[in-house]
Image (cartoon, rainbow, N blue to C red; front, side, top):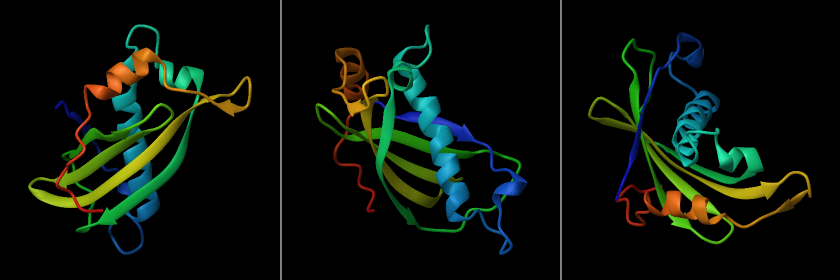
Length: 141
């Protein structure tokens, strides 16, 4: 099973008045990591998954420990926890060093914006996501 590692900077502006990275900023960091991961579908012509369209269906997030600003990036590891003909679920862990801060999943669906309707995953999209498929992550959400 492949996993995708994104070294994500935590910006000073990501912290809230309590001195921790708040839930909205965590979602932005996960989005940044997800875009980096999915870009791998078509490195030559940009990202086919976003080019043809996709939508977020759901998010599930669990906070294990606070995340704070630091100069070194945090590690966001991603893999595919579920795939069907019309959805893909991306799982994440956010680690600050050895400490697990966040675990999450995002379910996405390919979408045709020109026709305003869902579409199926293409063969290339399915093949890409299947190389990252691992259904037993060992991380509890």
